[in-house]
Image 1 (cartoon, helix red, strand yellow):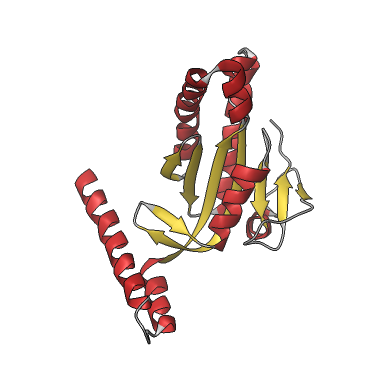
Image 2 (spheres, rainbow, N blue to C red):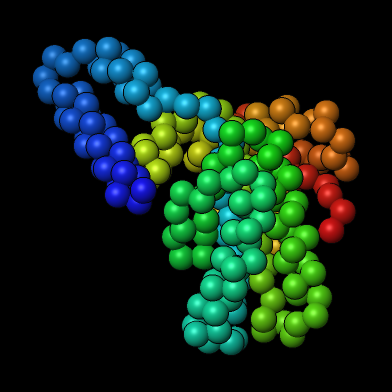
Length: 209
């Protein structure tokens, strides 16, 4: 089965690269090529970016080995939350994860589960071992390239919220996610003063830890 996954992923990447090369040719019908790209790879997903908070401070205070241990522990704790929440972990980059969900409601529930899991873990451990997480979630049409990556405005917005904006314990949502889950019975939302590129508004989810 892993063999088939690799073939599918590489085939998607190769096909996209050929289309991009066609798009670069003089006189290329870029609109027609774009339509083909979206037909082949366009899908609707909720996209989650996570980031461990305090990298520079923790490395300076506790050392890089301790932080590598923290990354390892975070995967051990959080991947089961993602699997329970019907998420697909597409990739990890350092202390960040990119996860996709068919449903924005599933993404938000998984984010809450992750934060609660870490809160319980941190409560009985010294500060040096704490795992602190920021989460950003977007939802909309994206280009999904096999199981390698996703691209789109909501992807960019979710990345900005999760990796650059969220502080420890926060779950930040794009406007599209907020609109999709507003009636789900959550504890409320707080509008952020500034929205990242890719969404016209962003929100902080209130939840009970």
